[in-house]
Image (cartoon, rainbow, N blue to C red):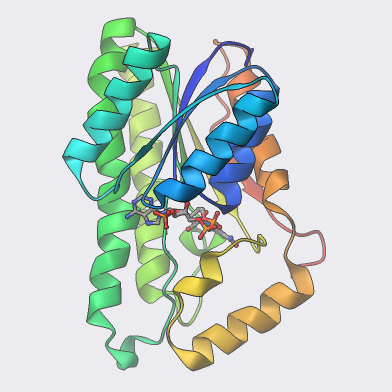
Length: 246
Ligand code: NDP
């Protein structure tokens, strides 16, 4: 049941996060949007409200624990609780290891790994106090299989996979009623390729995406499905991509 659920979404200013916010709001959820580009968040929240939905937003950087606490506080202040945190913010700076793009390696670790940890750390106390909650995180098919160029990006997404599976097991063992879902997208048509600075890697990805990518609304429907499942049912994992992508 989605109606009236309060859903916090990181990386809501574009792509999968934006599509999920719009779909969930249309389905009656109260969405709380976070990302760094405040102008985008404002425009998306205003357009959701213009369609009769409920949305709040705050500029935040997932690498900051304080910003993660702030978005949870905003959700509580504005809508009274948090039912779901959708840990979606991410960066995909693919490149060969030999290019030694160490700044990008650090950014990927900070955003894709620490961003997820910060979101869980901010929401878990509330979920435990409420005795309910749901964590949905975006990994990648690069978190399931090794691809040249994806040593660091794929590594961050393997981390998400492992972390979410352990979180799921521990939540079940502890009887905390926290539901957990991990989504593994393949090529989705978003702004993600903009984070690739290596020209060879960028050209290869552009070629792949120009052939296969599907719209982020498809992933949003999976997020919606996981939230809509009955409370006694956990959608553990979902791999989703273009039918035609090998
Ligand atoms: P986009 O680039 O469109 O969206 C990424 C989002 O993350 C943006 O809203 C961006 O907002 C936000 N973001 C990035 N860094 C930060 C930060 N430090 N703090 C807060 N927000 C941040 O790409 P997608 O929608 O595709 O990406 C969403 C997720 O899906 C990512 O985790 C990505 O790895 C994953 N994924 C995507 C695939 C694809 O093919 N598109 C395939 C597999 C996985 P802002 O810049 O405003 O902060």
